[in-house]
Length: 83
Image (cartoon, rainbow, N blue to C red; front, side, top):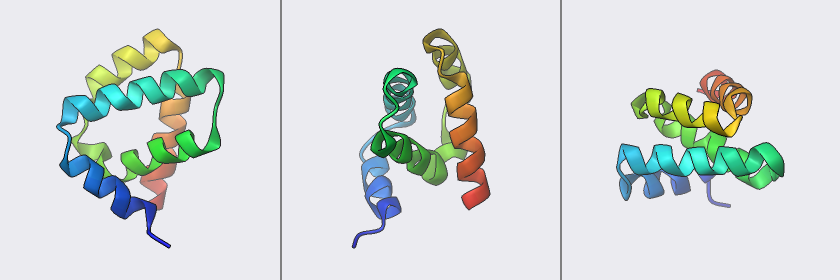
């Protein structure tokens, strides 16, 4: 089975930081309502692989607007713990 982190790394190479942050805020916003486990794990893996390089100001602003700040913070803490 392929390690999800390898898939995430390949995706990240094809995107710049703003696109990743935009994708994450959209995923977090939609997951604030439905919370599909697969999507939540995908966001956590992206944070695990590239969290330090993301535009956190952008993420905070949009997550605050979407009401997904708590979810983002929780996933970021889990990702940092898994490093």
